[in-house]
Image (cartoon, rainbow, N blue to C red; front, side, top):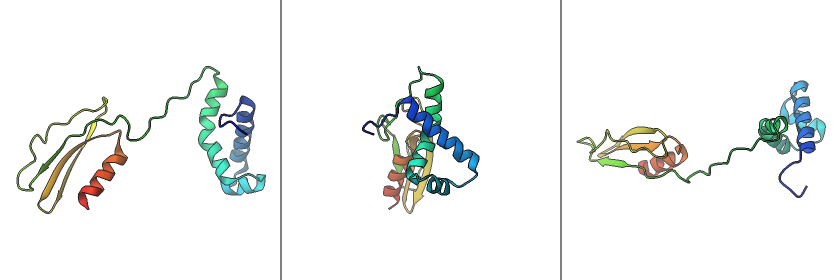
Length: 134
């Protein structure tokens, strides 16, 4: 198939296979093997299945746009202290994109930090903390 988008008939055939998988009681890997399908292909169909069911039920359905990680996360305020005194403005949490922030108090030796991070960017927060604590 040259297009990544499936037509309605192909989606329905894939959903029929997924229904047969649910009725079979087999593991996904065993079912894929029994049907002569690639395990990865079947897993892909499982992840797309709910969206395909919505598309088939409502032709006007438009899938929501995917948000790319790292885009639109905005500015993050970080207050670093010396470990003896609380960081300045520790109670201030900058709001980003209307999402709530997570407050993280972290101390390592003489370094301490109060971090207010947007809850919508957990991967970037983990990467920053890993670099800070290294």
